[in-house]
Length: 170
Ligand SMILES: O=P(O)(O)OP(=O)(O)OP(=O)(O)OC[C@H]1O[C@@H](n2cnc3c(O)ncnc32)[C@H](O)[C@@H]1O
Ligand SMILES: [Mg+2]
Image (cartoon, rainbow, N blue to C red; front, top):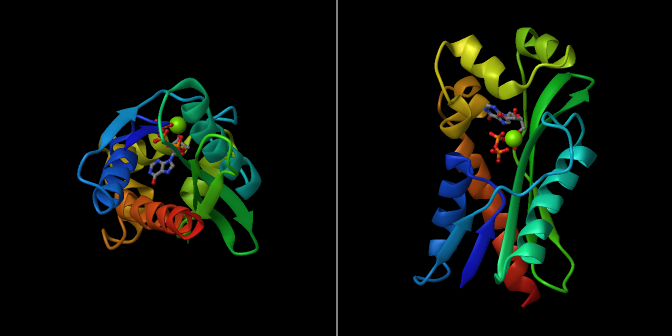
């Protein structure tokens, strides 16, 4: 099975490999710089979902693959504060794109304030933790859940929701 993933982020690629390996041994997974065509820091469910769908659909439009996967992180305002959110999309040529949402947690007010003034979560997290490339590893969700749910585990759940829907439809 040929798969293109619209990202080179390590946490995203790990989740895609983990879940697709349970389907088939012969996997050909290509990481692609697919444009999300949304802002670098999406600020709503709608925008984050659109980013995931755009990445997945770009993969099947521009590459000869069976499946295109798009995973996108963002934030959204709620009555309880600014929440970290994630969406995933699975595209197959000439079929409706499947979507699924991930676990969400409230970000600390110190982080939320910086995002509301226009900064991106990736660099803000590295600065906050005084470490590099948190977005490729445990992610903000891993940091603020004490490692209980890391970014790759959260994306693994989204991937299971996508692949399960794909199997149900087939
Ligand atoms: O290379 P891509 O696939 O774009 O991966 P990314 O890490 O930039 O991830 P997204 O574009 O999906 O996320 C949008 C922004 O939010 C940041 N972000 C999202 N989730 C994060 C997390 O759990 N930890 C740190 N940064 C995160 C990310 O670094 C971007 O600045
Ligand atoms: Mg990004």
